Image (cartoon, rainbow, N blue to C red; front, side):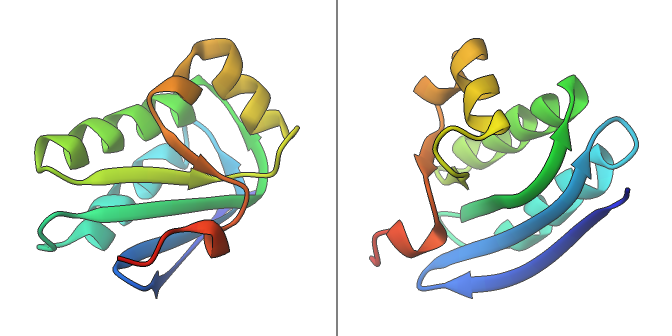
Length: 113
């Protein structure tokens, strides 16, 4: 299965809705989409909605970390929306990334500022 990336806004946040598989093959387009969504916003704030994610591998995790680093270097933030108990949440917990990423269960939880 491929990766579907749709962009929208939620208040001051750019939102990327992800569906499908985030792996070695699709990670470059994911990275590009997140960085495009950040655009010239100052500070750039992007939330990636992973509620439609079917699979993620280490390349996908690497792409998330690369985007987080890029946005934080610009004074911004990257947040993720993923259901409690999902495979992605368990993976973030195992790798310790749950302590460095801002996590929500849905985009509706994002504070409007």
